[in-house]
Length: 142
Image (cartoon, rainbow, N blue to C red; front, side):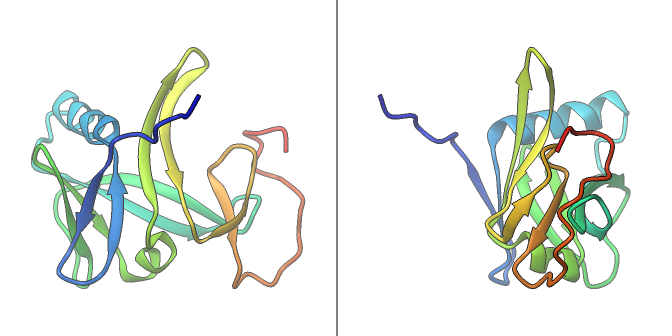
């Protein structure tokens, strides 16, 4: 039996900067914006140093984009903002929202990650030359 991948919506800017956001993720972002009564804010998606694999994902709502940010339209009035450095690590990634019996959350499938922690919040790229395989994030059993 073949498993069909989730339906996705490509999010692009005038550059070749591409992220894919699933309808489930877009709907959850819209719901969170409405619940917090900040419907015009954008979701900042970023990559920062840290986590047990060297880099970690982050998300935060912001009222407006900063200079040099890429502004990505995801549909339903949802905007994402990504700084140029994070965009480099997120090129080609897919942002999804998964709701399960064990809890829901955003998941990022990133083709640039060569390894990831068991929690999925931390990753390593091919450019990362460190060989630290320990996990210290405390949120997974890796």
